[in-house]
Image (cartoon, rainbow, N blue to C red; front, side):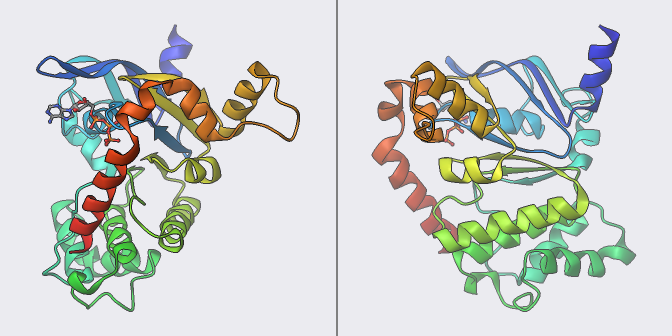
Length: 282
Ligand SMILES: Nc1ncnc2c1ncn2[C@@H]1O[C@H](COP(=O)(O)OP(=O)(O)OP(=O)(O)O)[C@@H](O)[C@H]1O
């Protein structure tokens, strides 16, 4: 018992029995989830699975009505400021201001997150350089491409040197080159700082390639958890797939979410993604 509690204290994120409902809609329904320090953890699931709601509870933007959430041992319900100080968060919605330059956008976050005044200019420059925006730093964000806007938002989240970076669909609607760029920058910062990354994505290929472990969420709960290879192998063994013909992570996803997947995702998801992207860069 004591050993178990001790281990949980060290986890980057530990959710136990987390539940959150909007009126009579149960969004998160008894979520148990552990993210280990230093890993890139992918939270996957169809539209409406409860990923954003869970993330908003972890970031303290939503209350924790039932269950427990801890971030590096700090209780998200009882010690919200301590949790917020450890976090960088890139939400799905646009968080950069098109009317400010890249540098001004990041400087704003540095002020909000209490980066000491004398360190601010250097920390802002470092965050912009980390995402390859040093040359574009003094241009208005309105002139940035979709991929540059996403990298700018990454710099905003990184300027406070978070121990845990949380990204909600960081590459949605971006072209493949911009998607790779975002992941490469996340990987480089993580390698340099050892920070933990919790990310949601609909792109199975990205989860497979960039996440150390993934959890498949459906109807408010975790339905499968492991490294991408473990999940593929597990389904392959059940289906007795021949070696070399292992299922993809997309197959695992479909197996977990079952027939509900087509109702909840599909075309509507694509339309929403496109619209979000249009809003982001417009
Ligand atoms: N502010 C809200 N008010 C009412 N219902 C909500 C609200 N936010 C989410 N929901 C509902 O809670 C459920 C889970 O939504 P949530 O956004 O957490 O899912 P998600 O897995 O993040 O989906 P997506 O992939 O589309 O972002 C859905 O049924 C959704 O309609």
